[in-house]
Amino acid sequence: MIPPGLAIAQPMPDVLPPVKPRRGVLGFLRRYPTIAIGGGLLLVMLCIAIFAPFLWTKDPTSLAPALRTREPGAQFWFGSDMLGRDVYSRVLYGARVSLLVGFSVAFFASVIGLAIGLFSGFIRLADSIVMRVMDGMMSIPPILLAIALMALTRGSVQNVILAITIAEIPRVTRLVRGVVLSLREQPYVDAAVASGTGTVMIMWRHILPNTLAPLTVQATYICAAAMITEAILSFIGAGTPPIIPSWGNIMAEGRALWQVKPYIVFFPAVFLSITVLAVNLLGDGLRDAIDPRLAKKL
Amino acid sequence: MWAYIIRRVLATIPVMAFVALFVFSLLYLAPGDPAAVIAGDQATPEDVERIRASLGLDRPYLVRFSEWAFRILQGDLGTSIFTNLPVGHMIAQRIEPTLSLMIVTLCLALTIAIPMGVVAAWKQGTWIDRAVMGFAVLGFSVPVFVVGYLLAYVFALELDWFPVQGYTPFAEGFFPWIENLVLPAVALGGVYIALIARITRATMLEVLQQDYIRTARAKGAGQASILFLHALKNASVPIVTVVGIGIALLIGGAVVTESVFAIPGLGRLTVDAILRRDYPVIQGVVLLFSFVYVLVNLGIDLLYTFLDPRIRY
Image 1: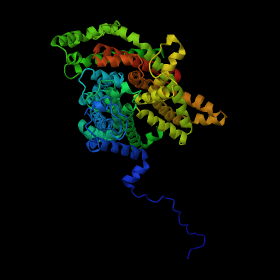
Image 2 (image 1 turned 60 degrees about the vertical axis):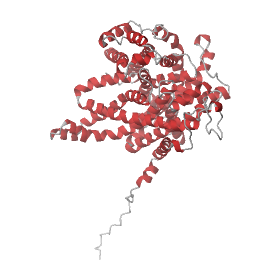
Image 3 (image 1 turned 60 degrees about the horizontal axis):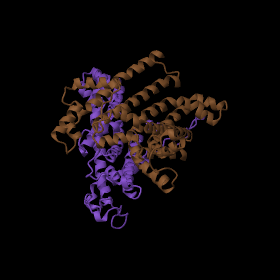
Image 4 (image 1 turned 135 degrees about the vertical axis):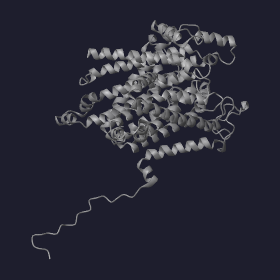
């Protein structure tokens, strides 16, 4: 029996939301559709690059002067250029150069920039010198810096990667240094210092992992920028040697004829744009997923 | 404030000195033998030696750099290997088209991008916002020459609204001049518009949440006046910063745009110099563009004190 004056508490309404089950990869992709779209497109491009020889292509460098500047059709899906080369095959093989340059530059610029940024953010004496050097490099527009470097070397894919990497390093260094500077003041770093952890260990264990998220996002943007820069360098004749079918080279060759045979420029242009768009979407998606606070801002 | 301005102006000197040192040192940083690369494949050993001597690669680095820097300070950018003309002279001949292209692009980009960003922030989350942001991603992704050829094909070849290529000096009248610059400016401005629209939206979103905006609304200020007078003014500092940083995009893009639209400016000069491996010209152009870039950003830093009186140094 319940004594008078006491009321049984009503059962609480179920205000807590039901615990959501782990949503897995599919759920994640559903939540960040830009990652799904960007990643999907990039995967398609990657497959095209890897399996180019099996996608009904011909030798992208074989000449057929009798069959030059054919309109797109059954024989040449994307037409043929002024030397009779198959534009379809050249564009598909061109994906290899673009992706190779994009990924390599993103990787090398990130790793080198990370090393310099960690070093400069943690060692005050080095900081002022390194950052003045980076400020100077950043005052040269990156494309011009790459052009100036390429003018001094023989055109090759390695040199293109090297030139664009050098031009991109200062931005990565800036980013990493900024993160390091803000982390250096954190209590947990002080605690590590107080407990006698060595500088190298602090960088490796406590600082480095925290730079990886923003660095990954930055790397995708560098990848996109590098692919555009590579195409621009090749387009103006300072990039990969003309014998290599890169999208910039195909467009450079089609340039003289673009008013009458626009398709030679058109197809590599579309592929380049889609690939860069894919990488940018992936980067935006990763940024949203990694840093929701920033996502609201931009 | 004057103390700040003087300090800021003086601070650009080491940056510029470093840029000069860096541009000069590229000759030494390049893998392989730059003299042999510049001379080309058909060069005789004497040619290579001659170029090595004209670039000063046969003498000690520091001696060479101090001589070179001293000449630069006197306004002498050296002599072209290919034409034997002074580099300064070649640059002066080509500067008008590039300057015109940049100014038109800048005006176009600002008049389009800022209202776009403001409206996107105002209509946050609606289809207008999404369209603007979608456009921004596209603007970042489609390279300038792709936009250039597309515009030229549609608006010049098919519709015949604008000339396909070329440049008319300003001296021959405003309309012939602007007519030739519309398509290149739109092509070049794509990335720039995307960048400015994005930062405008981001900053406006932040500013629009502040209390004084609510106050303005409460006292009955109109929507346009809130957005453009109250909010935009306080959002101007980050926007102006990005406008300055973005100049680097314009400079890089101008090289390509001038190739696509056959504009005889500094970009064409650079491309021709690359094809001929005319290194003194490349050095001169890179140096000039970098100095302009540094100066623009110096100007913007000084502008802060006027835009936002709260900034005190």
